[in-house]
Every structure is written in C-alpha cells, then in structure tokens.
Image: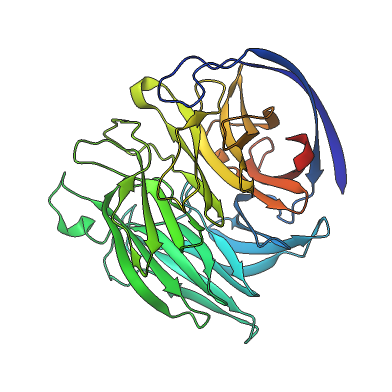
Length: 410
C-alpha cells in the first residue's frame, strides 16, 4: 500500500563565516517549502533492521537483517515499477556479529548479486570475519558464506564496500585487522584492503591499500573513468582522523592521501565514515567532522576522477550527527543525506548541492532516533526519484521504512 505524506515547514538557512568553506557568506533566506514524500511499504517483516540499498540504474536492490531469537537472517528484494519483489532469504546464522554501523552490503552486476555479512571467528567481542554470498546468474544458484579475508587471524574484519567491476565481477574493499593481534598493546593499527571477486566467487588481486586507518568508520567506494576509488577515515600518528583516499589508475593503486585537512584530533574512532559517488570523471564526496568541537557535514567535488577536490561546502544546520550518504544526479549536482537535531527531535534530511556551491532547499525526510540502533539511513536514485531507507524504532520492534522523493522537489 502506498500513501502520500504532505509536509509543510519553514527552513531558515544561516551559514556563518568560515575560512575553510567555499561560501563564506550566504544570504539569510526564509523559505516556505512544500514537499511530497511518498511512503512505500517495505518488503521486510517486523524485527528487521540494517537496510542497504544498491541501484544499477534500472533496478534497485535492498538487503536487510531479520532477527528471530538467536537467529539472524540476511534477506534481499528487488524494486522496479514502484513495487518490491518478494523477499528472498540468502542465509542465516546464530554466530553473526550484527552491528548498527558495520552491516551487510549488497551489489549487482549483470544479474550476479554479491552480499556480505560478519561471522564470529572466536569467542572475543571483536573477532569476526567477512563472509560473502554470491548469486550466479549463469548457474542460477548461490555460493554461500565464503571467506573474504584469507589471513586466518582471529581479529576484526568489516566495514565492507562493494562495486560492480568489469562484465560480471565485483571490487570489494574492507577494514582488515589482521595485524592487530601481532602488535604491542597501544600500537595496534587497522588496515584497508581491496580485492576483486569473480563471477565464480574467486578472490583475486587482494592488495593492501593503507596500513593505518581509523578502526571502525565505514568505508565508501565508487567507480570513475580511471577505475575504483576508495575513501575512508584515516588515522595519523598524531591521532588526526580526516578523510583519506586511494585511487586505481594506470594499472596500480595510488599512495593514500588526505582529501581535505580538517585536522580533527580525536583519540578514538567516531564511527562516522564518508560517502562518495561518481559519474565519469566527476566525483562528489560527503563526510562528517567535528574538528575544533564544531560538528558538521561537508561536501566537495572533483572533476578529475578524485585526484583533486574543490573547497568543501557545509550543508547541515548546526551540530550535525553525520551518518552521511550521497548520490550524484548528474555531472554537477549531488544529493546528500545526514542526521541532525531539530529541536528535541532527531531528523533525517537531504539536500541537493551543485559543484559551484549552490544548495537547494533541505528536505526533512522523517523523524528518527539518535540511538545507535537507528543505524545509518540509506539513499539511492532510480528514474526520476530519490529513495531513502532507514531503521525505525517507533514501534515495539525495529522496522524498515522506505520512502521516495521526486528529484524535481530538490
């Protein structure tokens, strides 16, 4: 069943002077905004959470986790013609590491579908492996629960991002803690790795991308004209945790670089990674930072496959929580989603931003909760609409909400 929600609200946009942002002075405008948010019934059942969206441009896929007593089940469904397919169970288990920030990912490539989950490798709280599940269109069958990280170490592995690669394969990147167990206490370093997963489920081109990263912020990846690029939260020797980037070009990976020097000094992981998308050589990157105790969400654009980025533009309304997502609409425009407080509430908002720094009218998608269990809202584009999914805690059991917004309203 589909119903329409009409929301009318007033947005007062005030951006203060900041030397690090592109638009140092912005005219104060009072905008009376009318938006139509279309609520669509989710294919998930009650006690479901952790949605993840992927769109190939003609069809959209959503994975999620259903919890029943001690059993966790990974499901997915496909969406087109404004309706969902029946939910399909991929796999289930009683020994998964189910986490609000580090949760299953899904991608599709010419009928092949790849998903991930985390399975405990030992009794420790943070000892788990990345397991993959691959549906082969040619064989019409699943290859279930095969290991991504082949190090054999009982340590942390997770925060997976994945993309189609070539005609039927996938590029996968993840945080890998194989060196954590061998390093002296207090000297441990998380690493970033990447690999190609073939249509047969073979893991090839396994490579170290960065030998020192933030321990538990999500990664993000996108495909440019030159190849994949990966963004993540870096960790310097002085505990500066800004956004890092590695790029595949000319047949090899570049050395890690910092995208924008926010100089956020924080001794622990903020659990708040970046989001990225690309169309050809044009790239948009969104991220959260709280440098100098100023919590904010920013976006920056690149026109050279992520080699360089313009100055960042702040998009939040103050004291943002982050949990960002981003999709590009065209070569010069992107949509960012994030969470922030609004009075006594916490809300999910989206806004359209152009590469020249121009911002559209921010839309409040829904009220949510600030608790960790509300997770990271997901966003994708299909046709003339933007789709958003998130975990709702408004009922007795967690449920997944799914809505759309016409691009013309942004």
